[in-house]
Image 1 (tube, rainbow, N blue to C red):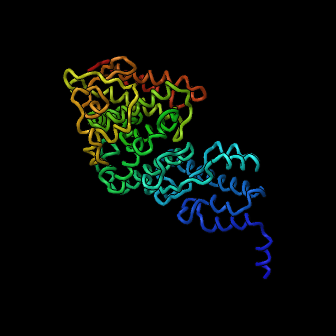
Image 2: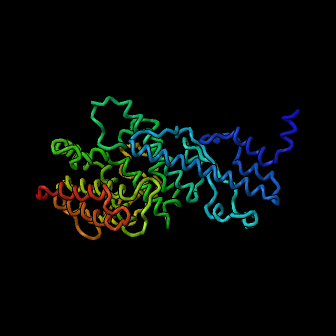
Image 3: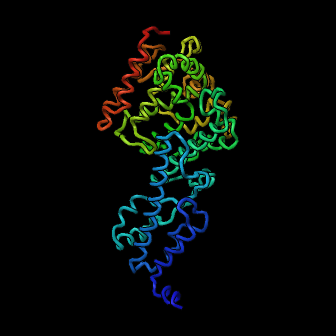
Length: 416
């Protein structure tokens, strides 16, 4: 009787909080609708609706901060995150404009009258394309990219545990992923993101594009191998690693990694972005420099098609059309290409598709790039010069590593 009296004396919004807490876990919102829907039971003129909604949205953002923290430690430790990302299901947050602008009950009610969206869709990380809307706000785009990164790290850790250590690894992670049925769906989630969620990578969403390109680099290049080849573990290990880097450089995965690395340079050079949803921009730039400089170092003009046109790396790429171009033999063609894709004219040999399929001579910012040690050193210096303009990141460990790499790849001044 006392319990019933206590319940009757409690405000409706507190009762709803308890019900939501009982039914909704932090990372498994697999029952019912968005909690914000239930809050409509609270009278809008009491001020309780605004406070309850603000608390629900605050909890959503707290959950996303936990996901971000998990991703950061997964990257630092080079292992899977603590969160079981495949079981993660979340209600997406509202727009920042609504959340930040609703500082009073009156401003909140005014936003509702203006048609602002209080409830957002639910996304299941196991089946992203089927559960996520095609248009995402900035917060939702961030959580999507971070979840994909966590899925990549979890899959990589699982495959490394399954594969005997002495067995030689594939030249790029994407080849190992493509051999695993579970990991293949992840490749589809990442590579086809511009086609399925093009709005989050286009226009002013440069930070999203930066994070996505970095994610693609981690799939198409073995960063650990490239670091060893650059002298991280000494000259002896570098010489052995370069043999495998040469093998990698002849693959479509390598050319895809180079294209993404060039996009990273272009994004950071043409904008004032000094943050990233996935990691620090100096790390993204360092990894991109590693990819391009090692590719230029070991590539040979003899492998390029005779008389082929020069491909400019620093240009806008329509990734929605690229899809898994050049990687179809590896991934087994993730999705059928549109009919027109099979009717490309042979004359379009200077396109990104042609470079991914066949390779060929390249230019960077209009400057023709030779292959060999001198060209690799010059390329590394271009990235180091760009990193110098990063302000607070200037003088960081990655900047020093990049300058040391300039000297390492330039020890032999021979060119191919």
